[in-house]
Length: 211
Image (cartoon, helix red, strand yellow):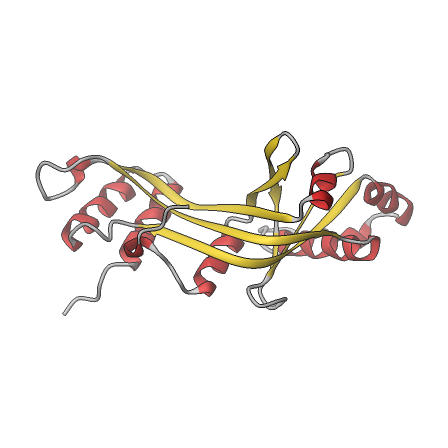
């Protein structure tokens, strides 16, 4: 990923925050016929390893896990808030449209989880996502009959990715004046779209402090 220094985010906790808030990511692996990409729900353990560890799972019928056995170096991609920025929103004249966005690329060494590890992964993945649902008691993997869980488990392959490097890019108008950023954020909020609101909040969060 091309990351000009102006848009680079070097605080790993910020990158971890984006991953956890946008945990449905893209896993890219090398295969004999070229790159292959799969869209997967990920689980991040911030404290496992130097940069953290990702876990995911795929259907056993998906050949990606065999590709990982042959070539364990993988790339995982996570996308944060993003949106079109119209030059009409800026106070400055004769400017071009652009796209503001946040993205995190994670490189790592992948391995396959054993059965016990995959069981634990599925439990923790459900807990992480059930905890954010309103007005309901959390569903738990352990509520399934063991025979049913075992059959489901047989159809899955768990993956663990030890993170070896993280690139985080937050292109949020840092090359524009604070007045232009504020004006664009106001216009984004006026759209009423949740994604635009999140983008506006991130743009404003990165404004320099006022004197």
